[in-house]
Length: 113
Length: 115
Image: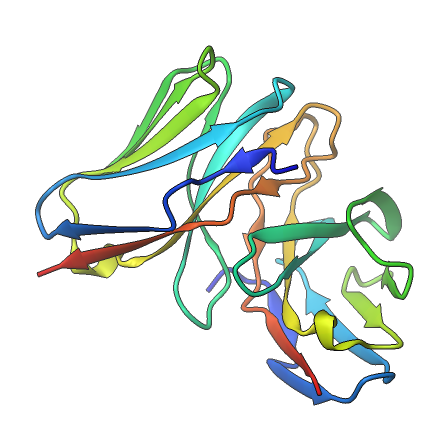
């Protein structure tokens, strides 16, 4: 049973517009959420994170929103750039889990010039 | 460059064989994690070591084992290989967290192909 779900396998966005990637989770013990970006033939790269005591975290063009009641988080990229084209993974961890991450299956973002 | 290195980059072997994947964590990181990414799957956590000791196990098969050495590098041993073991294997490292607030830094991965 998937504890972290990314229901959109792919997303296509025009350059300069907003990209919104979504993630849902089922485990209420999760208290830390991360987004990773992955280019082909490379390992995942940490992008941004949020703890469960916050509902928003912003870093430059990237903002993550957390809705705990809905068990939903989203990553907003504004403005989107062609270099943002990659697979984005949502991940979560729970207190007492030694920090082990549970990953979603990823969303492939394509930003078209 | 995350600072995490993995060797080899690619590995092709036959069913029934045994292979060893190697990982060197970022300087100063004491925790090493191993993940498997199969086709169309997310990353599945396999096992974690901290300062030489096993700390957590995930969906790791009994045919697989790992260890972390005194210099903190880690090896993942895969034996009696099956076709379904073909996957990308990632190593990640982090400073051991006092809580679950833990950013992991990933290596480039080893692509294993079992023929």
